[in-house]
Image (cartoon, rainbow, N blue to C red; front, side):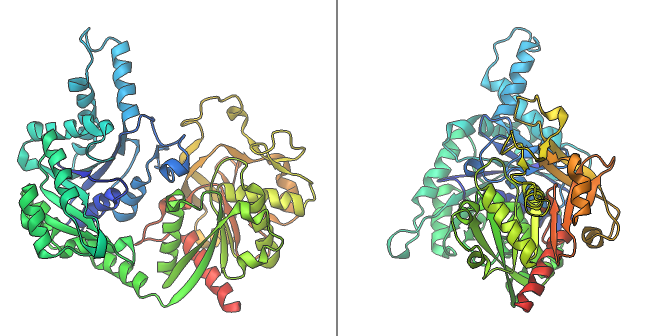
Length: 536
């Protein structure tokens, strides 16, 4: 039987529950335990697929094509636990399933209520993940903040796990804020009220992770312990760090977080194996080289919009013993300047990430042309690859106003267009090419040398494709089609012939990058940017 850890949050949102849950999973894995992680999002959307990045950050995609919260990305980067659509639960999914069962008459005429029908469906989904053979511990992160009306059914379901599985098999970890007021004084009252609200629901936290600007003093921890009924040694200081989030598991381990967990769950204590993780953190913190990457996108104001891309770039830096500095460039600004060279004079490479919609597209095309003509390392991901194709069609093939039908449905040269089976689709959610797919690489191409393989598997999230009508013209004029689908029907990657490093991929390699195993494309890209820096 699996044991369960529920991670909740208090005082305010965005305190880092996802990183806390992932760090705890990392520590338990370092002790040889098999873990699973689940993210619960209280919003009524069925998934994150139709949500604006400014609302919710990036959409993280699993191998089986689920569009999920970005916290699942943290789970994959910090642990080796497998993830699928089962590991993402939303209010929308729960109510959709319960209403479906009611319409089918499966409740035998009974009145359908939050308790027990909604809470039973929540528990069923958690148990389906946790009770798999070989799973030791399941960590469940409940999104939102204690006190939010949307979270109440999930907290109630979590409380019922105590009854169903026994108190010795269930732990509650509560992440809360200890704010700083005038003259740097830390205040514990918000944490006290947050725990009080949780206890009113029937949940007594076993462990407190106290988020603060600086480490908590022993006196503050004792005060929090006294007013929250949490043991003193289980009041953990989750202080801000200036280095990297990958240091957080090490900070928690120094304070004995995993010792407390295995003790409370009655798990045999085994030594931690953290050498590889420590090496990653050491290489990041002590990197003496610096490389600056220009990110040309339309959602640059919000860091979480391109979260996985940024982390994969950091991983590429770790692989090259170099610190990566992100230079965020709003693509709309490039459309209004006379000389883009000024924008790129201080960067060593350019990356255009994924996205949707027409806004800022011309600025991305300008950036791609600059990189192609000036020999700048350039990495285009998803939309970024399509930008490479559009720019090449306009400025090399001389197809004036070539475009994607996403941006100009009436273009004379639709070098990017919808697949025939996508044309009449009206529903937006879950209808793109999603999840893990096979690609075949052209031998002798740069991307083939980087992967060292004829066949690769990467995750997709897009609807528009390179039009096959123009493939011959592209290849005859120097745009290498270096990757295709297994049946050769769709373009998966392109390269600029004779360019130092200009690659575009239709898939999302950032979803398969971890700090301990950086993705080869990002490692190679950072290496090329470092070479460009030396030339400059």
